[in-house]
Image 1 (tube, rainbow, N blue to C red):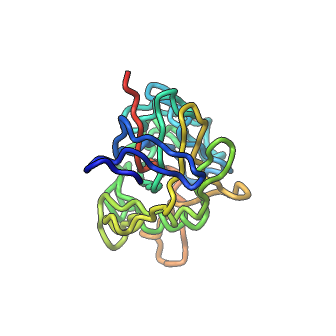
Image 2: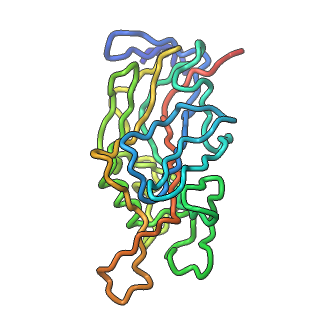
Length: 251
């Protein structure tokens, strides 16, 4: 990096390209996806919609067609779906996923009805929703791969558990977080991934083979601890943060 007094003015990328740091800030770009327990989608795309459009959502194939939610500022802050605008750029130093566990009490695959409350007797949620359960997070991390694709090339790829969030609720026991809530738990890239103006990009969760991802199971009502009952009325919202230096639009 090149500095002028106490201000960073340039970043030199591994390719030799020099990025001028003008109108930049330390700000993540984020996008969310809704996944019903038992989803079989092989690819789940992030950053492909804006506020006011529908949130990416994949349902359980045994249920009805998904009812997807309308995106709000809590779901995404993307300016243009699937690419940077003419005045945006991003240097990605870390990828930080957030996990929120909900029920779909109205109907399976109805993401518009997602709720913190378990219908009826709450014997299937050993921690308060939307806190993520340890067993659910472990299954997601064991089954899914996370990729960052820029201009049709994969720049980051690893198991979902490789990417630590580094912030949020921390409740050891049946609850879980992706790494401890501290900055030194984050897997930061030595070299940032550059997404230039008007460059197409997406992050993807890959479910190899399209096997059912049954991340929500219940053992609490079983006399046999080895019996695991799939909870089809459970869903997870994953909010993915691309964290780093962001060149914001000036107009």
